[in-house]
Length: 288
Image (cartoon, rainbow, N blue to C red; front, top):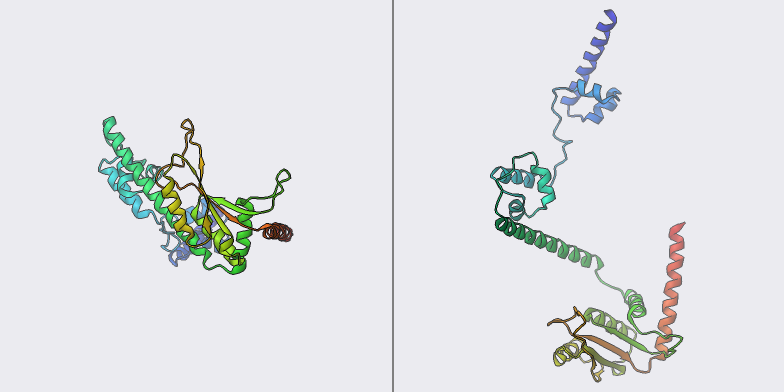
């Protein structure tokens, strides 16, 4: 009996100390470490009835949205209707309100219309997030040095420009792309290399079923006064092919050729070899 009384007194003393620490604002981890209590069951008994302090509670950004979702669910709203109103995912809504009663079933047509509106809200939210990510990423680039533009241009050309092949050993600089931004960067790179605009020759490649005059005008405006335009190359239209590059935004591709460019081509090839070697050496350094 004396041993039991002693253990009870020890527990009560420990509980008194634990409660005092709790009321001083300490967290469970701090109390556990201070009193050397490693058993969670014992720690729970020591702190039974004592509310936790406010500071360890981590505020969650979606607490207000969760509360609103539960409110709407209690009003009889479906997941789709809650999604339309709050703009959050149905997966989150399900977790927040799964313990609440379900609303009465709706007709298939009404349910389909609500689901469609909910999906439109989700797509709009995703597009907003996508555009914000792109803006943030663009801001990370900032300004560009001439050396950075130089290295970028070499990599851009070696990815998209024409290259000499064993079966076609011609050495000339020609670049083709449908993206006007790629064309602008390539032309900026040529200007950095002091390539005279008089040596530039442009050609439009486009499907014959497209608006050819409009495409030619589009590319002339893109390149400004740089170089001169040659004859447009028309691609035969195959109606069986399910082409995606159609519509008002389709302008074909622009070919940028640099006349008398064999020496420039050899330098580009050498620059690219230098970049590959430097990248491999940097990679070896990162592995050590």
